[in-house]
Amino acid sequence: MAAPVYRRILLKLSGEMLAGDDPHLNGGGGIQQAVLARYADEIIEVHKLGVQIGIVIGGGNIFRGVPASEGGMDRAHADYMGMLATCINALALQDALEQKGCFTRVMSAVRIDEVCEPYIRRRAMAHLNKGRVVIFAAGTGNPYFSTDTAAALRAAEIHADVILKATKVDGVYDKDPKKFADAVRYESITHIEALKLGLKVMDATAISLCMENRIPLIVFDFARPGNVRRVVTGEAVGTHVHSPQP
Image (cartoon, rainbow, N blue to C red; front, side):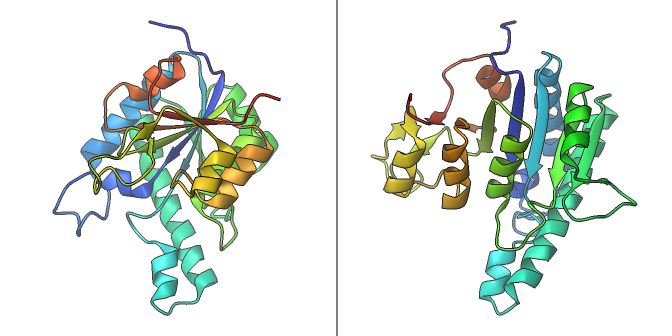
């Protein structure tokens, strides 16, 4: 098996992906155990290569703050509810990993001391150096910031070599490939180009944070088994979003 080209990664998972395609899960909501178990296998496969892994997970399969606020709920209140949803997903992923023998820590930006550790940067670094997978929950701990921005922030804080954004498509396109048959996939693009073109890679705050800290981002299809390993070992998978050479 090829050696990894990254020492430490930040994996960004959306909450919706945990629901899979099960029509019985409230129209796509909730957590599908079989999907959770497969994702755990993918993560453990990379962890066994000696790669240090941090994970930021969303909560959209349970609750999304922005749609709730658009429906009349106070935005800050709705976002805090969304943060709690990410904690549920983080604990579910922790259980799936630990059932397979992978030591894991959940660290929350909102204190819930009875079920997970508070996020402390130096403690997170220590866990990573000891070979534990660290799942960062509750986003940044602040309303009005997405979990994409949390992923960029945590990646910068832990000095991750790359952010791997797991999606249901095989990269970044110039337009929605589900709606347009002539959509073109980018193999490589810079952060600033993604911003100027308005591509749905991450939100503008997250992309700007990656650009300022020169953190590369790889957008790839997590539904294809083995893709995390392929990305980590340097295969040309998905779309590489990067800063131009100085």
